[in-house]
Amino acid sequence: MLLLFGSLGAAWAQNTPAGEWQTIDDHSGKAVSHVVVKEVGKTLQGSITRILDPNKVNLKCEACEGPLRDAPFIGLTIVQGVGASPTEPLTWEGGHILDPKSGRSYRVRLRLKDEGQTMEVRGYFGSPYFGRTQTWRRVTAP
Image (cartoon, rainbow, N blue to C red; front, side):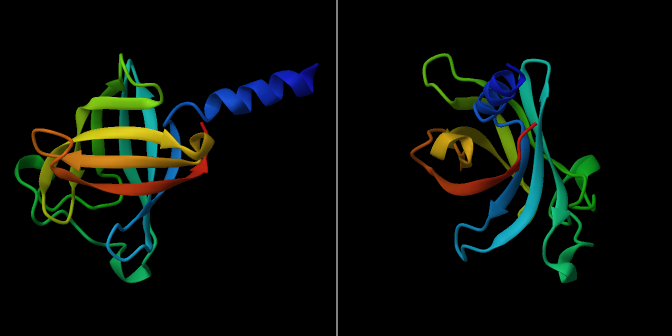
């Protein structure tokens, strides 16, 4: 019986973006960082927890404005205010994602794929048709 409930819990966990994700650069295809996504109330928030290139662990958000200017990449909240889509299953939208390299903030849509093991992260201006997509790989579930 315990095994059954443990399996159900693992399956449920894969239906949420909450957990740790490895970010993949959409140009090079290389793993870049880890982001932990957490549920905060009814929305999601994601922060960089690890930079994989040892030569870049001390990078700061030099292009960011206001209080984020020169904030270390590690610990930086890059995903905010994302809520479950009322119309699309396994999709979260309505928030923003920060590109710490450019300092720009974009609207964001998150969509789970591959039984929750990968997530399409689409940053865009205006319409989702005008943006770019990265695929993140799940490291751990919540």
